[in-house]
Length: 169
Ligand SMILES: [Fe+2]
Ligand SMILES: [Fe+2]
Image (tube, rainbow, N blue to C red):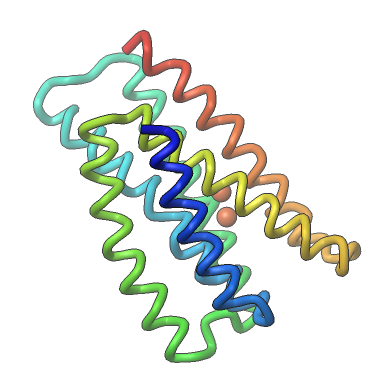
């Protein structure tokens, strides 16, 4: 399953990189729109399960973590909007349709197989970190992007911790 995750993700990411190869800002904005939705999906599922009585200290911890991560990704998104990443209609159209599909896929994936959903999201966060690191090679003084890149790396670590907690939930 993890190989299938990688295969689908690599192809999607390569397609996005190709599509946005000369438009960094727009690419970052689209990425941040996408990056938020898994956390909303995780929260939706955890909330739903909690409402059915499936809850414990760990699920409460995960809800807090994913809420904070969703807020953090929103801050990234706002930064890209400040820089004009959402200026063009075509990018907004593309990102908003893609996220609609992606959100629901992640809701079902996390409901059915949380470990695999985390695996997908770890790969996405790793890709985000690599994307920002590449940009920083040409723009080493962009302090804000440096901070965002570090946030993405933190998300990778936090998701790995969440993944390791799953076995004991
Ligand atoms: Fe982000
Ligand atoms: Fe992130």
